[in-house]
Each structure stands twice: as structure tokens, then as C-alpha cells.
Image (cartoon, rainbow, N blue to C red; front, side, top):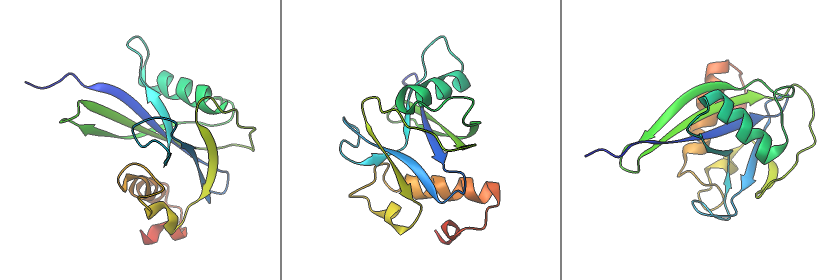
Length: 145
């Protein structure tokens, strides 16, 4: 018997020149104490896009005026009953971040993202960033991953 899938989102936020991505330091499990993308649960009566913008605003203070989010891919973890919707966006301008529960930090996109002792996601973080960057056809050093 298959569990009903719980809908979650992950939101990859890039700075204007795509050299950094925004991370939270998780205050609770999963990945407590590790860097991870912002995101959260999709509520029952909201669209996936509404949920992504709501979670982004709640966790960072970033609004629709600051960024356009694009639903890039889904990761379905059938054994855990999770549907993780991956969104990304590039900030239109500098923003003042407003932290909710998790501390926020910009991290340079480099080999440090491969450090599983610092970053959650079991190596999915560099994979997701690379796939998004390849899609955007941005010839940066991230293409070496």
C-alpha cells in the first residue's frame, strides 16, 4: 500500500550574478544544524506556486516583487511519502533578509557544497544547483560538478 504523498517545497534563491545561493541553517530535523535550502509544506488548499511564494516570504522576507520563482522539478521519495517540489529564482535586486526560525546565510557556489558534514540533502544540493544552472545555460564554474 502506497502512502499518500506529503507535498513539500525547496526554493533555490540565487543572488543577481548567480555566484551565491541562499541557505538556512536548520533549527530542527531533518538536517538539524546543517545548511539547506529554504522551503516548507504545501497546505491543502493552496496551489504549489502559492505555497512556494508563501514559504519564501515567511522564511526570508523575499516577496514576489523581489524574485520570480520557477517550478523546476519534483523529487518523489515514495518510501518516505514525500513529494519535494524544487523551485528556483534569481533576485531582481538586493534584499534585506528577515529570518523566521532558521538563520539565513548566503554561500558562494563552490566545492564546499559537496561537504555532507555542513550541507543537508545527501549531496542533492550541488546536483540541484548544477541542473538549474545548466538549464539556464549560465557558463559558470558550477558546470564542473
